[in-house]
Image 1 (cartoon, chains in turn green, red):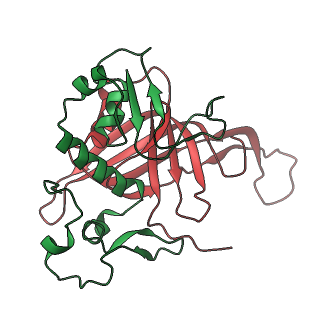
Image 2 (cartoon, each protein chain N blue to C red):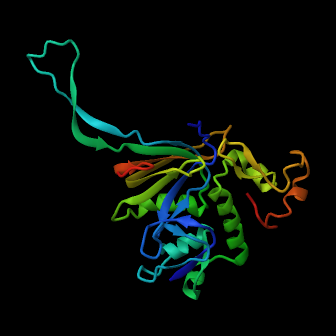
Image 3 (cartoon, one colour):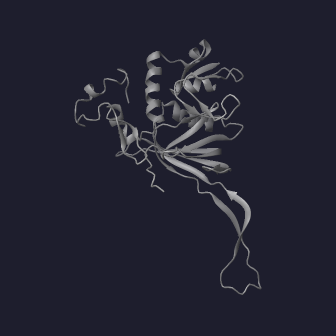
Length: 131
Length: 143
């Protein structure tokens, strides 16, 4: 069972990944493990880290395309280390991460006032995304 | 020399052969790694101080933390899965700090405990503790 990474990740150092980096697009093959919902390919897709790499994985994930987009969006937020206190600002596009000094990295809507209508600032969030 | 902010720090769990960030973590208590010592005083010691010596072993301690718990979130289901389906081998974990070099501590976890708090004036919170198997690998060093 296979999946394809949607984010750059670190992992086990192998001859194919000598620095432990697994870039976007890497195909991970877990065909030697049991083909059930605990297979890493399924878990990585359900976490929003990867997309199914074959039909078997897609079927076991049991997720619609919309659900997958939602978890992928949520994982991007987690991957950037966004603290839950800042989810609102991140979702509104006012920040996209943190500088090494802890200050927010401005997002595309950084200039907007905090109390503006969320519906306007959330235009880049999947429509059915619900925190 | 710098004072590193905590925001942006992440706890990562190995899934398959890649590290995946645990969602909605609020705080982390780093493992309190401690050299094992013994009292090495002798009757003929005339000094007032009680001497100690190292056994040459190091206790890895535990890594604990708190998160906003979402029972439906796969990231949190993966944690509880460690309790319902204990892995045969140690789990691999990593804490990635928010410095410019993305420094990290990696460690093996022998076991996990998970609980939570439900309070009227707060969000649903989960607390966890990972018992280390061995000691962490620190930046620029071996374990």
